[in-house]
Image (cartoon, rainbow, N blue to C red; front, side):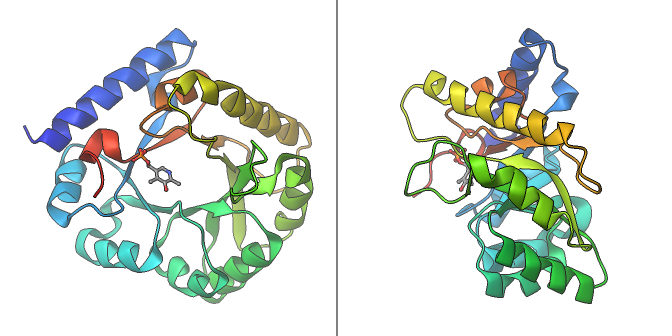
Length: 229
Ligand SMILES: *Cc1c(COP(=O)(O)O)cnc(C)c1O
């Protein structure tokens, strides 16, 4: 068994344990392998070990890996996206987690429509309000969701966030909870065409807490592939 496969088994066990502990099913949580700076061989190990979602931060790097691995996995973009990359994203990306402004949404919509497809997106929320973070402010999220919902080639699936860095994963809990409550509140609005099923939250240091707080997609790099250079 490869190290990557062992790591994936461990992560899956922890996800299952924390899901059950909080009254959820392990199958409610999808595990994304985040592959920035990871070599092809270890990515293929992850796919062999049953990984079905790959998360990439950069379009070019993602496209190169897509050309190697292809559509047997889902390709999710989790990094900050420039508008001029939207035309490449619609060629191979299944879901974009980092939509945080209307002009970006509009450009993805335009490019998706031209490619005759629908793009699944998540709205990235700056739930902590830190100056340095990307993401729409929590108070402005409902309004952004309303505006983006009018774009026909986009399908809003839920919300994504990154809490402030901390050495204690418990520090992230209130932010994860806030994102879930925000998701529930937006869901109650029943905006036509808007699904509020997904909560993309939790990384290597804090995913057990994110699962307890309702994550449906956890984005894991180092716990699967080891630390980055
Ligand atoms: C790198 C990255 C991750 C994975 O981080 P790890 O700490 O390695 O698990 C998750 N989400 C985003 C947006 C990232 O950039």
